[in-house]
Image (cartoon, rainbow, N blue to C red):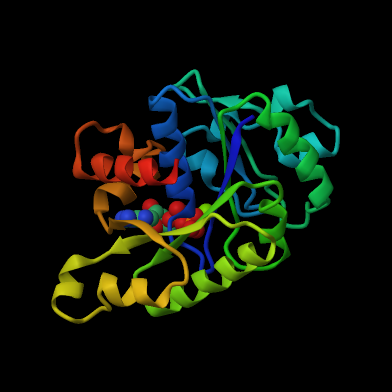
Length: 238
Ligand SMILES: Nc1ncnc2c1ncn2[C@@H]1O[C@H](COP(=O)(O)OP(=O)(O)O)[C@@H](O)[C@H]1O
Ligand SMILES: [Mg+2]
């Protein structure tokens, strides 16, 4: 049975979708069969970050409403045979998906994949709950600033309340220069505010931003500090 991992955050724009795309690419590089599910209903981006936007015909809503079978909504990555993706519905009000729908869908998908990574919407409300159905583990992405950290903590509490024990944090968009100058909180200060283990951090890097806009997971560029760092984070997750 596959493992389901949720990528969540309190604030928007912390890097969930970027993390999901790269996490999936790296697992596929390691020979795992991986499915990425975009659950940011109405605000989907994962297709763009994977460079698969032209391949989307059916989405998760079409599957649960019976418009399309799962096989039609699964999009195979151009680079890896073992990396698949299901798009979110592009409509914000297209939320006729219930937790039961998600539970049944994931039970079915878990039989076919080693890992299912769910890209959650930002926030800590019912949309997060819907994305968090049937998950084994949650990774909360935060930026290295107090507002983002506070919101990450709200997400962590919501996950724990749902009985999800394995919740960890990745700190993204770290600006070492400003930290060293004492203009931003240090990693220690940020970490001490969080009630969950921090399993890694990623620096702000223009190359990451450029790669997402090209639809290429940055970890595919071999032997960079970004790829090595991501590999370390991955090993702590799995
Ligand atoms: N470490 C990073 N360095 C540079 N840009 C980043 C980094 N992480 C994310 N970004 C950029 O930040 C923006 C938001 O990232 P995204 O993954 O879409 O966030 P979310 O899914 O949490 O809303 C994107 O434009 C992305 O390219
Ligand atoms: Mg996103």
